[in-house]
Image 1: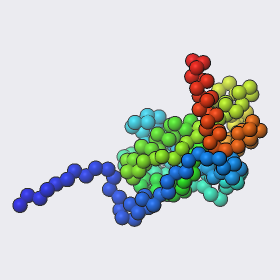
Image 2: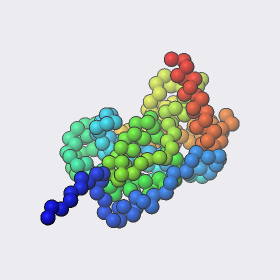
Image 3: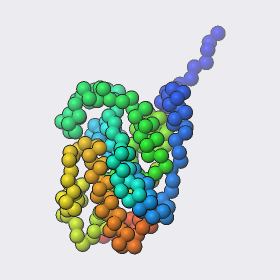
Amino acid sequence: MNMPWFKLRGPILGLEQLQRRDQLPEPAALGTCPLREQRLVVLDLETSGLDMRRDIVLSIGAVVIEDGAIDLGDQLSTLLRPAQKISESVLIHGIAPSELEAGDDPVDALLDFMEFVGDSPILAYHAVFDQRMLARALRQALGYKLRHPFIDVAELAPMLCPDNRPRENGLNEWCSHFGLQVLQRHHASADALVTAELALILFSKARRQGVDNLAALNLRLANWRQRQRARL
């Protein structure tokens, strides 16, 4: 008797992993909660390259902004063990291949991160890249669709400081502009922390400009993007 066969699609997860994935909370919409009361997760990824279709996430660093401050006791840092050897990473990020080989299982690492995020919005510098890389990693490893709203600190900075800004729009330039000390660039945890410090400065400027919640901030960003496109 011939037994029917089925082609398996998507990741194969253990029962506990499936339960953890299915219990992840739905993301909250950008609302009218005052910025000082809003919980936000600030994210930075290190990846094997800049190709959003082929490269993979190697490291995740994240910190929490809550009650108008960075909660240094609420941080996440993890290395994801890749399925194949990545030798170039030691040159790009200072991550040794041996560190990657000893990294966490990607499924568990990504579940840990999404549980850390909860329903909170996510901040990142050049957020489109982090959002797409994270979304692809979650889809491939967990079969999970990322729906959390992202806010790009690289857009907030020039929007809120149009007349007083560095010539370049990189994270290093804005840190120098505001006198922030970057302990270790191209390290996910350090970059997430300094991005959070920059975000708090920008939120203070937003409040002085009459913008005190994420819904209003996101609306202003949409109008700002439209004006930027019109100038091209």
